[in-house]
Image 1 (cartoon, rainbow, N blue to C red):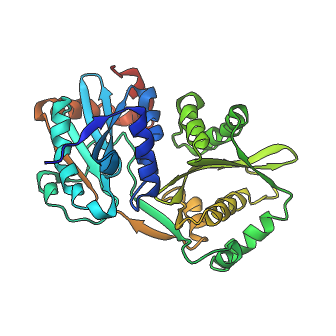
Image 2 (cartoon, rainbow, N blue to C red):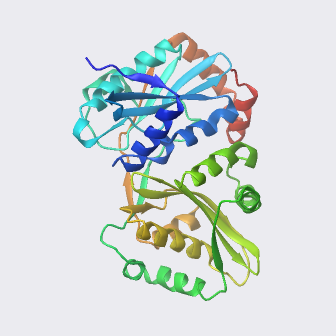
Image 3 (tube, rainbow, N blue to C red):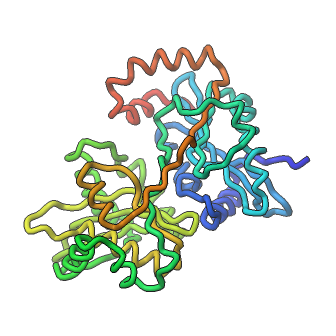
Length: 346
């Protein structure tokens, strides 16, 4: 019988990230650098891998969330396997609660990004009860498989998007793909400012800088900035996995007249994806009413992960105490990430 390994050894982190990059169901939340970004909250992570002669056949990346006396075993996405080893998915799911119990977690959770019907899920309940680690609801997909050059893709957009993209290219904007730490930090302040103005959460620079810089260094992400007259006008961060880029976060400076920086940056991201022969671009779900309308202009197709979240309570008494504790945290939900770092345990 095949036995998995549980590891954080760098050689396997590197091989796993390459596996995620090329797997059909690879998603950036599975990358080791992204998982490691939660260390600022006192969380840990590990890989579970099935191997054959030093080659990864399948696996998952699990976050181990620790809050005081409570521990949670969370798969933000996955597990995944190579196309020829699809049967491993069931074995991997079966391992999740066993591993969670071995680590003395009171709760485990998985979030699939496919529509598999798996017998091992009979041991789980549908839904999620731990809501402090982001899991995707789906993709906002721009299919690129039939486009070898950008102009043909542009013609597929709504007329308003075509007009605004072309107009943005006449506004005197220039684009840069940043790798310098100080330049990225300066541009990231605009993203933080946007989050503050629109009342949504964002990580501060100290929490996220290592993740951004490592992903860029490994050529798995791009930090794209728009300038005019040497001034930052907007920035977006995109990460590659599964042979497509995902728009993770961004921000623009609001000015009159409108420079259409959002259209300019997303178009640069799409041109990059086409040049790298990506199968698509995930412009991401959600946002304000205006943001959703903006994304709709690109004729993106919403692909929702229906019935994809499952959980199992490992220690019912301890989890009941957590739910009681959480009840009094809910009025402060927007600050929960900061509170988690206060209550973290090593």
